[in-house]
Length: 328
Image (cartoon, rainbow, N blue to C red):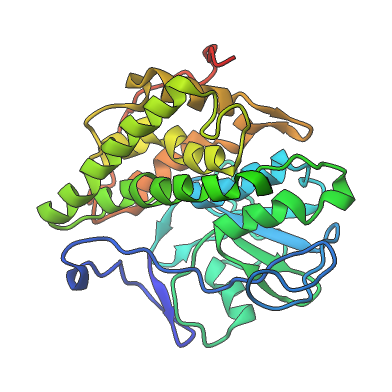
């Protein structure tokens, strides 16, 4: 994984000793907002106006957090407005690499740099912190807008509406109070729960993560047995924030992260929901085009030496996401 310390790269994995064997995720450090008129958002500086061609997104196809941003870029008709660079699936001693020698990896189409950390250092030469995706870059100011996926998708949800004419709203004001606790539980026990299970270095830490994970999957299965989407008949950001974990679960988290009480395809409603969102069509194309299972499987099994020291890529199941979903 590695991190920057005072602008210098150090090849270090997450330190779980200080947390009793538990994995603790860093808080994103760049929190500006793109807005329609360039006014300040809920955090950070003003000056990031929604403009076509101004912003560039760095992502990994493997990463569920970056996947959120790719999904919303497509849902909101932004593929012609925001450029993308896709990192190499292997994240080794140099961190995320911007090479193009793997199918689907683009290299750095903006600067031609070799490593994602170099993009971070263009903004903050003495940066201390982990180098993560997604990363949203402002080409006009030459600085990072944000590396917080939950906020990037909300920018994409509304800031560019006047440019695109796409007013689909996945964070509707009348549902925000109801969405918040759903998001919180899904983030803590599912999105991050699979990582806390997989990166645990003590039995106690693993048990503290994996049981709430499956309790929440049971809870979500019940919700989806009664509703088409998590908030009823209206699709919201909560559905997509959950989905990027579900679509990876059977091929990666079940075995690699030891989340193996059940597969997602063992839950009839969660499995149908996963297939419905995978099959979703937008004005910019199919959401399925944002899923690169080759990158997903390669990244997790090859990059996480502490979990898979021999870097053996398993044969894996082959769930058919194109089966009729039966959800309406």
